[in-house]
Every structure is written in C-alpha cells, then in structure tokens.
Image (cartoon, rainbow, N blue to C red; front, side, top):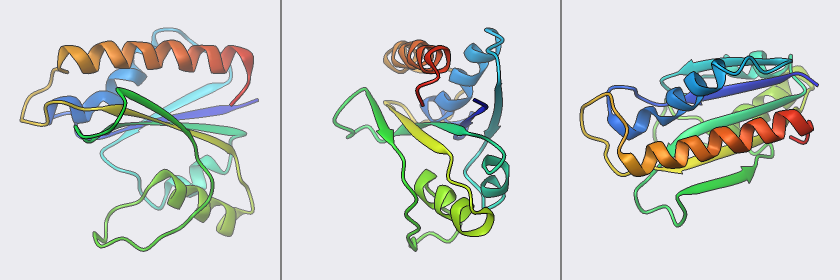
Length: 147
C-alpha cells in the first residue's frame, strides 16, 4: 500500500504550522511506501497527486475551540462551495480526485487543536505534545497498513 501524508498550514503562524512539524518528525523515520508533501493550504492540484496513492493522511491545525486536542476523522468525498474562494478541505480534494481521476484513496484527517496563531515559528507546548502523539498514531497506521 502506498501512502501520501500531507501536512499543511502556515509555518509563520506558530500552531498553524503543526502539519509541517508532524511531517518533519515522520521524515526522520524513513517509513516504507510513504511520500510526504507540505503546503500552505490544500490546492486543486492535490487531487491529481493523491490519485496516485492507495491512501492519504492529512494533518492540519484546528481552531482553539475544537472539542479535542486531536481529532482523527475518516474523510469521504464531499465537495462543497465555500465562502472563501481559495479554501479546500480534504473532503473537497478527495471529491475532485474521484470526479477527475476516478480514484478514491482511503483518507484520514488529523486535526490538532491550535492554541497560538500569532506570528512565530515554534509550536505552543500543548500543540507540540499533541503533534508527537499524532506522529505515533500515523506510524501505527502505516505499520499496520490500516488507513
């Protein structure tokens, strides 16, 4: 099984860069059959990229009001129009992949509750701790091939 892990967010806005942090930690582990990508936000082009994989894992920051420090969600295709023109969700990208490339990789989203979105490049201690837990969960998923 081939897996793509996408970490996205703004590295210059502290906890919003948690997706990048998780991928940095995972990159050091040299996981088999795994590729990784980082970006500021999800783009339409990601649909073509994920079409080449059996599974995709998305990692992003969540708003401070999120109910849990880490939320793990199975993503299903569901394109929706958004008020902000340059905004796509993992469900949007998966829907585009299904529509354009007739592929629907298994998909999971890890949302890590952010605390501090001010300018800066370090994570808050709570978010770093949650991110390290997400790294462990992703490693378990990859090793058991259960995306």
